[in-house]
Image (tube, rainbow, N blue to C red; front, side, top):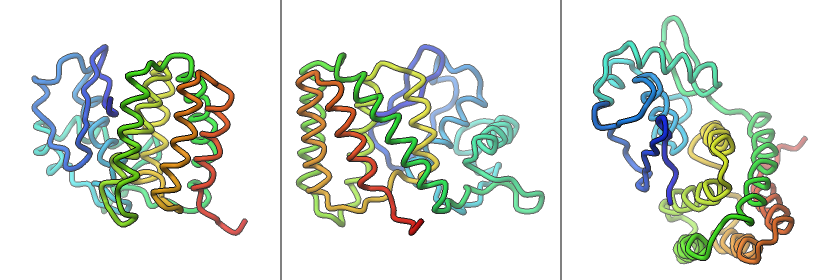
Length: 231
């Protein structure tokens, strides 16, 4: 199960976290508005890093890409500006915000708290099939070299699968915003083998239905990757 977007009661899933080509709105039933759709798509492009920090966002180009007029694009960008993901300028238009160490450190702390909660909830709800898919993803990550760019997509899919098994739409929405603020996902400060080992410990706790252990191991996993700021 990969991360996706929610439109009304429908979930449009994306397993390939590479180039996002949006279909016309008519083939995405259930979304609330074109603005909602465009905001979700741009937000996901920021999360995956396809729209990197500092990238100028041209409304005409985005409108053509998403097969909509410039009006919902402009409204979506204003919404994303209120979320802190883009910044508007009278002369330059909108650009993806540049992160700084302070907010990144805070986001790791918030992410650790929320993802720990998610792991705790998932421990009571995840089934053997879910555990099996998570283990498969983790084995794929373990086999990759530390410079393999595929790791980021697999890691994102792993974590969002845990969020989804928590069964909380609100938590899932909050985690999408947090990953977006980290521009392409959390930076890695450890080897893939060490990260996979920590995933194993989380999976063991989830498999045993041990909510407290799942939460504690998840918190340690997230904070051990937080960048050192010297503060």
